[in-house]
Structure formats: structure tokens, C-alpha cells
Length: 182
View 1 (cartoon, one colour):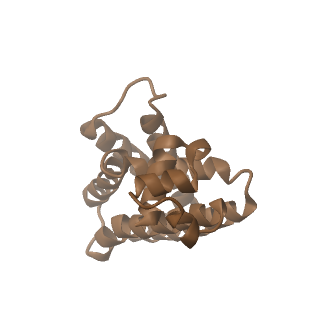
View 2 (tube, one colour):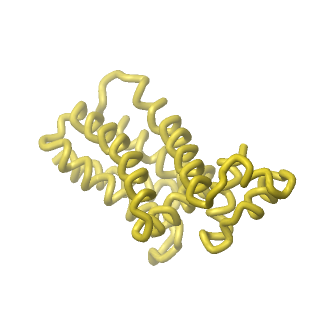
View 3 (cartoon, helix red, strand yellow):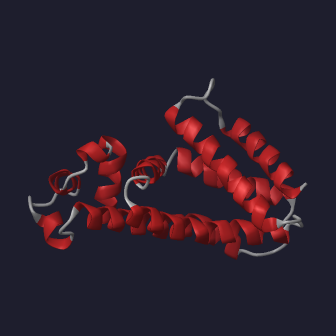
């Protein structure tokens, strides 16, 4: 799929190396194939972002749809699994998201799409922590998401003093959730 190859290209090459030809190579397509479907670089970015939103929804939506009682242990397990997946198996997608987030400071249309995408997940976070008993779930969900973004960014870029293992990620997630539910 071209959108998957676009995500990979953004993650590996950054936006400087994000060209139709680079995506053709990543997708093992004949030169010119990507530009046939996505005429502009911006259209290709939007396709990558739409695919990221689809994959994120699968990552997040599936555990939330299981329903049931939401307690601290279950919530910590859920959030830890998501953060760990985004740092490991879905690392390229997470890197591409941050590349596009920075680019959105210069591209209003991209920023609007990112905000729409992010809003859907903030609502999920809000509903989840409300079900766990948080007061002011909208404000606290926004803060929780911002803190989780910081955790992800520091671990991905390795600017944190140490790289955390899964147990330490779990402890950090529990700390953040404890603050969100306080």
C-alpha cells in the first residue's frame, strides 16, 4: 500500500527525503506510480496521516471495545501496551507522526487534519478515564495525552537520560494515570 510506504519513508528519511520517487522505491513500485495516485506531496502526506489514523484506531479502539470495568491495573496495562507498541512494533509510524506534527507548524491544512485526528483520541482518553472515575475528564485527558506524548518523544529520540524498559514504561504510565485520576 502506498500510504504504508509513505509512512516508512517519512520515518526513515524525514520530510527532506519524502518524495514521490522515494515512496515508489519503498513500495517497490514503478517510478511515477505514487504521483499517479497522489499528485502532490501534500496529498501524499494526507494519505499517510489517514493511514496512521486508521492504524491508531485499531491499536486503541480494540482494547477499549472490550468494555468491562475500568480499574487502575487494567488501565495501566492498556496504556502500557499502547506506549510499548508505539515504541517498538509501530516505531516508524510514531516517528512519522512526530515528523508530520512538526511540519504542521508550517502547513495549516496539515495541522487541521492532525487536530481532527488527535481530537478523536482525546475523546477516547476522556471517556476511558471518566469510566475509571476521574473528575474533570476532559482537562485531565488532555494533560494525560500531552504527558504520554512527551514520554513517547523522549524515548523515541533517546534524549531522555535513560532508555526505559517495559517495566519502567509501565511504572511511568501508572504514575501518569494516578495523576489523571487523582
